View 1 (cartoon, rainbow, N blue to C red):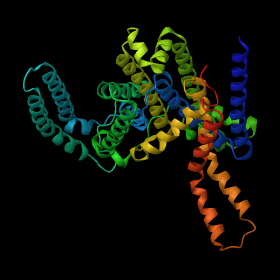
View 2 (spheres, one colour):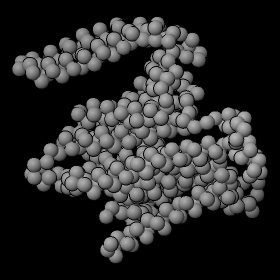
View 3 (cartoon, rainbow, N blue to C red):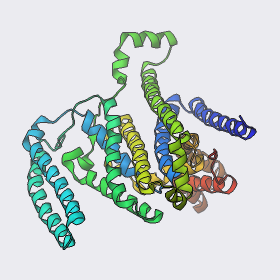
View 4 (tube, helix red, strand yellow):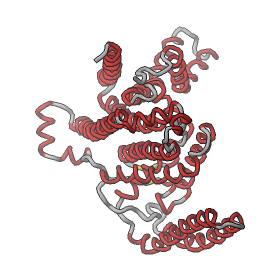
Length: 437
């Protein structure tokens, strides 16, 4: 191991130890429930950052449609793990399925017509799309109306397959990967700035569809009560072995059950994260990883060496989106509900990109570090900022405009801190806290 490598390893250990100290300090100073909540979302954020790092750090693809893939992962969790709504499925499920097949067939037919017809292919494609649209809606709309009419106050959707929720996580990743393949086939030929605009627009479309198509996942009425891969707190409190364990340690059963559940989630998420790190590190050190970095650094030279740049871009775009979709399924499972209204593309996409840039673009461990550090700051900055402002304004007269202004500014501390952290890192460590080797 070279001196430079040893120095980088030491730096990584120190930085991860610092993040661990922040989490432990949160548990000691506030509560372990808060610390474990931050830890679980930090693990999910690290997985999201890994997915973005695969796209940007490996291949230089600027994807700002992250929340669209996160939402698709959450949708996958609902469609796989929720119990089926047999009444709604029998009322209009078949018509919906037939309508979706007709819609897909229309798109395929239009593509084939555009590719194979020597003359008038533009007119033929437009005619196929127009006719197919009306046929598609004439079949789909009655089925949607029938499904949404079934007990709309608490159901009104087709439900899921009732399968184990752990199976829904990889399916959520596959759903995001499928959408990424469709997007990549049309958008990856664009220049990086146009690719960013295209992915952002498509993410908005995905979230708009999820908000408005109630038959799929109840839209803005939300799906609640998703199955969990860990026990419920109430069941733990009633279990004999758990009551004996709590009595032995002399702790409160309610608090202990909450901590146990969060530790169980942390164990599951930790296994997923470690598996992804092993896979991504192995890929990065392989000939495939070296090829991707060569394409990222100089596409023209890589293409001159016989590499299919567009195909490799599509490949890495699909892989990164699958990881982001997996994180979306994990987050929906942790929340226990799917709330499409909370997927705000610009706000949270910015946050994930800060994680990647601060941690170190192109370095998988850096992306993980950024995920934990930035999420801790995102959660803790506002309460810490409130304490800071209360201390600063303690000597000011009540009713002072300056005191009121400073106290009101606490609500903006999060975004201010994210911008400040980003500027400091870019100034003093432009390649991130853990730079790519």
